[in-house]
Amino acid sequence: MTAVSGSNDLIIVQSGSGTISKWSNGELQTVAGQGAEGYIDGKSAKALFNHPTYTAADSKGIIYISDTDNHVIRKIKNGEVYTLAGTGVAGYKDGQPNTAQFNAPGGLAIDSNDNVYVADTLNHVIRKVTPEGLVSTFAGQQGNNGAYLDGAVASAKFNEPVGLVFDETGNLYVADSGNQMIRLIKGSKVETFAGKATTVDPVTGYMAGGFHNGDRLTALFNRPRGLAYANGVLLIADSLNHRIRAIQKDGKVITVAGQGTSGDQVGALDKVMFNQPSGVALASGKLYVTDTLNNKLKVLNLDLQALKPLRSEADLLDAVSLLPAGKNMQVWLDGVQVKLNSATLPLQESDKIYLPVRMLFSSWGADIRWDAATKETVINKGKWTLSLKPDASLNVQNIKGTLYVAADYLPNISSFMQVYDEDSHAIVLESGQ
Image 1 (tube, rainbow, N blue to C red):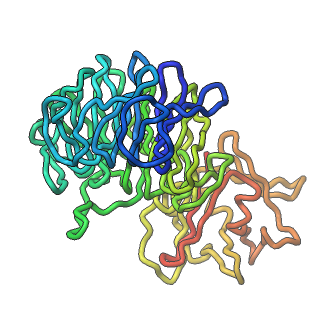
Image 2 (tube, rainbow, N blue to C red; image 1 turned 180 degrees about the vertical axis):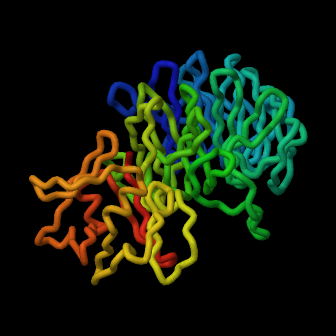
Image 3 (tube, one colour; image 1 turned 180 degrees about the horizontal axis):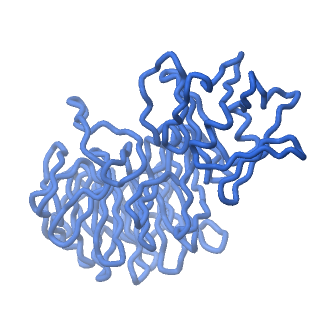
């Protein structure tokens, strides 16, 4: 996983090799670890970790590490590695640094007083560790099994919390991975910030994951893990959805990168693919993503003040409530079903679906006119313009006096996207406007 130091250097935890590195000025430098498993404090080059995961840096440049399989919190200062808190044995105990216990600690966040907050994943609680190493339970009820309950910090329940991040006012966001939610610790209360309760698997104890954008309290996630925050926007590594999601200031959840299936690709935001992203960190206007199963660190250029929702086939289908399949094909445009009459139904010829131009675009609120000079049908909506006329390619046809356009032709000549859902016998389009 990754974090950002006060000097905007990236701190990178390589879990498999047990090394901590720093990316600075285009160079990767090893900060601590030998590339082997173990548990040794001391000189950073000789220190050993056991599957370290998350990291954070305080205002003094001290680096903190969740040494997950050693069940301790480590710190790196002036070339030395120390144990801040924990005994090296899984358990649950508050108190002094050398007697306190954790169980698979995960995400870290640091407040304005340099206290370290720990997602104590398998204890299902959030712990607080002072700079001196004193440990207390900050939120949640410890238990062998996770659960879900909002309310006072002492009575709230989590299910394998992982990612943590503070906002500018000191509110703490928690990626509650087993509950498939983002929780918010605000003052002395815990509330659900995004996601909603679903059915619980009796074997795993996890709520069912899913995928849905829109209002934050109806959105669905699938094992959310890493979190980052800036300028009122919360970014989420939605691990098993293989996506990076964002919760905007208006409370809407959008997808900003990732295709919903595992893969390994870079490039434009609508092309990049991940395989279980687990960490995110913001630095100098860029979002760094720990692409876990691809063993890569990927960087996205994001303008947090003008985020554009990713438009993929899955997003198009997610935006509509398709009806059961019927005799006639359903047509949806920008989330609204197009009402067609019996004389202007979609036509299916071979592998092409043809849509009636006038009915389709008039339902969208566009103006449609005939240009006698060019012999084209011209469609206008605001600054958006499209001209169509029958041609030899058969992408546009005049059939019995009605102009039709092939659905798969629209993305080639306009900002439209389309997907056909065979189960519902539906064609879904989005204008991109």
